[in-house]
Length: 114
Length: 116
Image: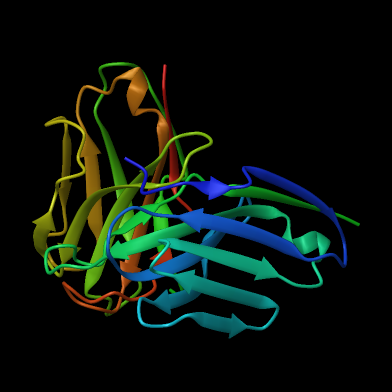
């Protein structure tokens, strides 16, 4: 079963605009990861944020984590047409028998128009 | 190779046939995961290997699904007597961390299975 919800389910913006996607989850986590998926390259890891971190940056990506609200957001700044893809959040649960397996959300489909 | 590879990339099976899906992880990666992704959904966990040991198979949907990694590198996911609901993309991922560690996972391109 899916861990939680992502919203919006679909997002359509113009090149140069910022895109924000949100993710909520249900259980205690060790870390939360964001992945991008498009038909050409499969699932690509974007960024990992641990449960004791609140914000992380990587290039044009900014991720926040609020463990009290069990939510995370991914901000892509100055979007490009090449950012068009599906974006998934995935959580790795706390606890010794989780083995680092990931529980994914439903994903947000981002379309960036040139 | 530089990344995780999977074969075949596409497989069409008649209902009732057995299929075998192969995964070649990144060399030296201890952990190997299999996920199933239905159309329009996020991937769902199937099973986990640390080296050759299958430590978690809680996500396998039925006893028709079987996975192995006999030498701790290449893994095979086998589905017996395929059903239409088995149609999905099967993703393999590897990670350098061992059991209990949480590292980024590197995914293969997937095998798209269609059962007719």
